[in-house]
Length: 310
Image 1 (cartoon, rainbow, N blue to C red):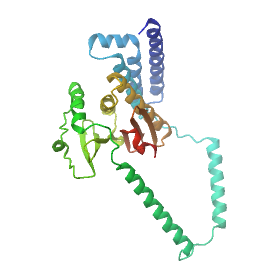
Image 2 (cartoon, rainbow, N blue to C red):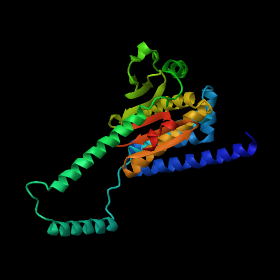
Image 3 (cartoon, one colour):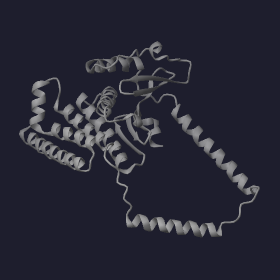
Image 4 (cartoon, rainbow, N blue to C red):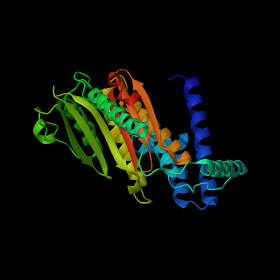
């Protein structure tokens, strides 16, 4: 990295560090202690002098990992910010218009008959058949033979266990017996539980190769005592899988990619309170994050499967 690039990155780090620290002060003023503390720590981690101090004491770390940790803390802090429940004049006008429209519709609505008309029955039957056909088409696409991640669980597991061992996480037996796989099944599924209530759900094609991997966490399990640790472990596991399935990325690049994808999706959900879904393509792999009031997931599947485009 030349001197100009180093200066630019340093300015960017100072900028975000100061912004997050100011955001922490704003959170304190709003009475959100946990969000303020998380954002304050994140802002401090972005400051170049703090990074150099950490690297002097922990040389096995890198600037990329410290930046990723700061990003994760910022994302987690949004879950503890107070929600804005003020109703604007425009919202009130729209509500009034909706109420008036509903009243008008109720006034002209015909009285319900005791028995549905034949045309209505036929329409309902056709709608039900269409729904069944659509679900069957999706199922057929998911179970399509030959669309896999191009690696067996055991091949993937050897690389994955090496990364998790360095992080002090549990080791998994990725053989057929260890995952309780039945190769007679058209599509087999296994589940691995990790610390911080994180679950990995994997699908295996009948040819023995992985079809998909999905990390899951119940958002209702997040609280002031475990939010930070859960976020760090979730991002690490997602980044580790990314580095294995997209080897063109370094370990640091994979961790930052996963943290950014998770962070941007979770942040948008926390701001809008509407379910969010974001997909990024890396080579022949598709990475998808979904966030809603029940679950946060990080999914990896072949780009050719098209399931992430539904």
